[in-house]
Image (cartoon, rainbow, N blue to C red; front, side):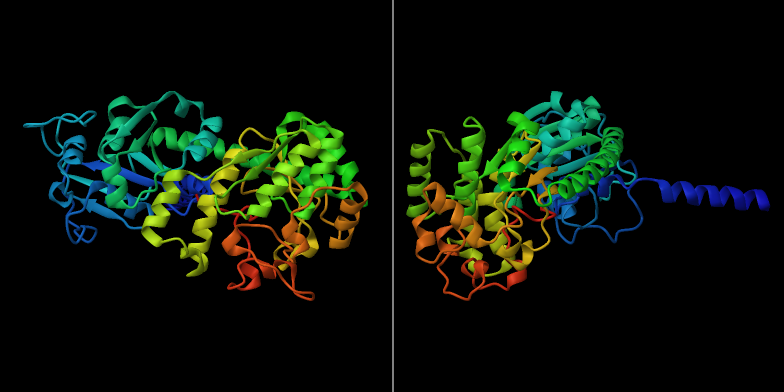
Length: 445
């Protein structure tokens, strides 16, 4: 009896220590879509509670599973024939698909949690694939191009035993609600577990980095922006860049950076909806300093899909819609801009808004997994304008007309004396939601 209790306790302890592979993967890429586990079943389960109410496209089933639903499907629950072949429900008669599971002995497929699955499917962006590839090199070697449906994407790890990245065809995108920029990462379960283990090891390194960053931030207390930037440019070399939105703060930072190191990287996010005045100061800054500001643009396919489905002003209908627009036009381009960097510089100041009062001079950017440096964190608005006037720096004429914050034209307006600086952004929302996701602690993929 005592021996049995010890065995039970040991099993419970092992279960408690067992990592949740799905949660680890989802947390790392910061996606609202969970990784989907797929398991081929050789017998039809007696429990029919997870059977879909009506036949669905396989791509729809995977999308719904990524959003939280669980299914156990038989052949007739899948409305399109190609995945029926790919998943091994039947042998080809007139048309074949490759890859497909052979021999065709599949009776049902469980689609849902990663635990107990044979294959893991992740609906993610190419940028997220790149991040995972840096951790797990095995992903990098296998790219199959466009697949008709996720049936083939599911079958690939079964037939090759290797990870795979594939695009979806247009019909799957249009009928099942996939973004143009989304791809499918397919992983055999053993690779998914190895990837999760490497992420856990990386998390330990990340925590060490966070502790080091906190010490750095303390060291820079009382230092001037020039001293902070001089250290950052020397320490990070070509692995650091300024994100320039053409605000007064960014004008000041541009002057300091290009005075210290003219070749230093400065980039901007051209959302496609900027004011004419913003493009004007962009040109004037480049002319004054002789440098080029690199521009990053939203994915054209994502913008087209958003406008066709929700119209040109969906961002005014809800916070969720506005953040979706920001995600497409700003956050995704930022992720590309930061690729390969170890740190980035921003013009954030504590006094700008309620959402920024806790920022540090040097901090860990968990959303982008690199160091963020805010040289102006402790400065006031008057401090910034004093520097601009003393150094004759080109500024956005919008700011002389009462625009305290610079963004997209439909979401930015002038404010009057006494109003909060951020009152000119998304004025139809409450103050605590007024961030686009560029400077948030978490982000959806």
